[in-house]
Amino acid sequence: MTDNPKSHPQGNAEKDPEDWVTGDEPMTGAQASYLKTLCEEAGEESDNGLTKAEASERIDALQGESEG
Image (tube, rainbow, N blue to C red):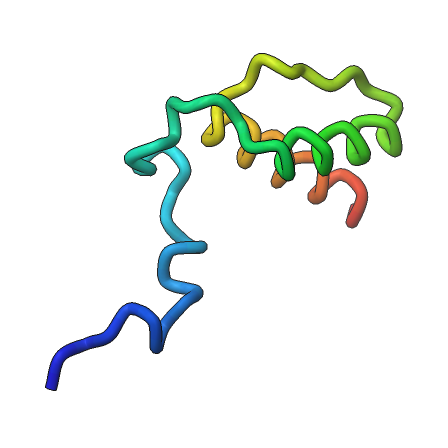
């Protein structure tokens, strides 16, 4: 039986951003929007020049701050 990746959609979500094939591409519009919102809530400036991987890590960090 072949392991179908569609049957495990969270598998990709857990991959370290540093290992992403497209991690060095500019962040997506959704990332930029969400990051801007999180930065505003945290009273910090957002950086529009981040890569996808950097944006993901920054989002994770800001989410951690808001939970703590």
